[in-house]
Length: 252
Ligand code: SAH
Image (cartoon, rainbow, N blue to C red; front, side, top):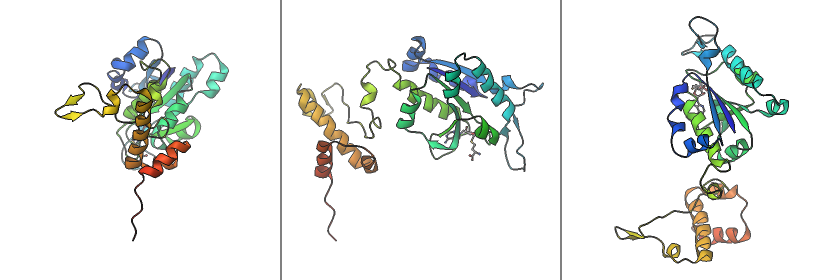
């Protein structure tokens, strides 16, 4: 996957992409990250990328011209017409659709993404209207810029690409991958400060372990995020488990 990021602060991306799983993914050419400084696409002496908002109000707004030109430069770099047509151009904004594991799975299917990071008061509305094909928010709160949201989106998507995690199976059971929360995980020692690992996990009985995992997944989700269960397709066995674990309604 190729990812192009438009930002006023490319240096912010250096550390997160230079360590751990992400670095390995880049080294193994599973993903390539291209950083574009929006300022490089300005034409005036002072490299002005922002300006005062029309109609007044506080703060500065990112100008449309350098953002349009940066995206056009990236597109002209791509030879296949189909790829250009299908290329998601994602504007990070607190007004976008709320990011989720499902959206990450959707984005992981593309071979190329462009992300636009706003800053200050935001981005000229014409970028949203006539350039972006998607708008994503990472939550109902406001950050100073789109850089951290872009990192959140990229990290979540890249983690899903085949070969990025050590074991292909690892993302499948993750919390939210199938609408449910993951079961609790333990590692050695089997006993720590008197707290033992659940016996079934050290039993070596794979069928029992799988059953425990399924039960824990349902129980956790029921306790912490019951609304997720309503949105998930459960098999009969799982539905029965939910019924068994749901506390009876109190008689009034
Ligand atoms: N005035 C804008 C917020 C600007 S915040 C408004 O009220 O809608 C500055 C920039 O930070 C935005 O352009 C966006 O790129 C980024 N940003 C802030 N919060 C975000 C969030 N929750 N999700 C995604 N991007 C966000």
